[in-house]
Image (cartoon, rainbow, N blue to C red; front, side):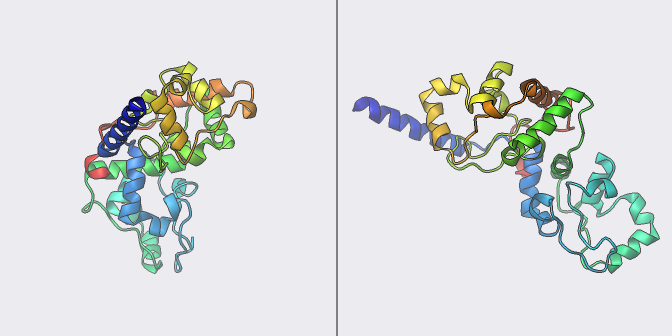
Length: 263
């Protein structure tokens, strides 16, 4: 009886500690949360993926971040200009663009006076994640990103595995991002990564009663993909995650500690 009581008190203590600590968020996730608070999704649609109608303009809709970005911003710097200034310098010099802007019912605001430089960078990271940018040059990493989408991994982990969407009951309250600062706590190496993908949990977590408690109570549980994997999938997926964490999006580890104004 005393043992059960002690275990219960320990779980309550750990849960309270986890809730009290601000979660370590990836830049793309900080950007997603900021975009929701700032009103970006009101025009660009849920998570920026389905723009609202915009009568008066020839394109007729507000661009989404997934497929339309390349039409308006070909580089990270141009995405930053859109957010900070409401348009790129080149667009603002164009009479045609200025006329189209005036005719549209909805116009992109300039957020430079409302947001800090870091908040702007977080929004840039969010837009790039949705747009699938940058793209791995390594063919195996690129195949891993493609298979992650086909297997449904990005449904929970977000585009490219870079969001931390809510997961009630889990230890930190979200599905971890693959480029998030807490990912190494969950996956120490390739062997553990394979266990998570194939079985839905690692042996290390399965042996730990407290870890099992949070895994079992989470609303969104990691599926076991063993029977859905093709030969080479684990190699490709691991290569993509490694690329994402070591050689991909600019700013992914900036201020990993938790956010400040960007949260």
